[in-house]
Image 1 (cartoon, helix red, strand yellow):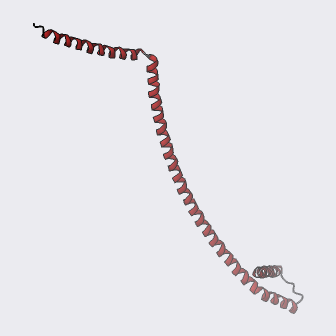
Image 2 (cartoon, helix red, strand yellow):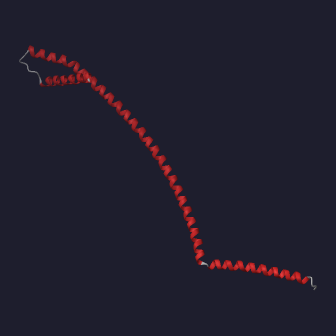
Image 3 (cartoon, one colour):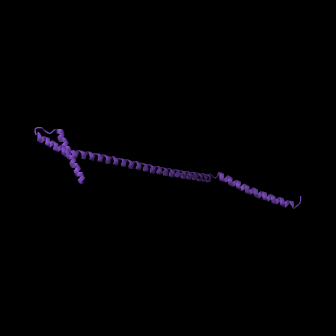
Length: 157
């Protein structure tokens, strides 16, 4: 062995010692971290907090989506109900107009004949005063007169 080999061996030995010290320091730090319960609890709490925040954000997103969906369904249902109401109102209006027209036509027909029937009844009573006017004929005359008055008042209004 020569003297030139010794310094290289010493340098190599010093280098290995430094590396071993660094490795030992890292190992000690890792063991200290494992035995530090407070720090580990904080880390676990931070992880749990992050998971809860993520779950809350997911729940919020689902709630927003459900709200939008419910709103869309409500708008569609409202529009459908409105359409049905408009249709029903239009049909009812048409039925009322038709019924009113029919009633008017019938009233006009009855009142048109009423004066003539009244004149006939008066003529019959004048021809034979002993013969009394039948209650049905009298009732019909009263109804015709009332219907005529109602129609005349409506036309004036």
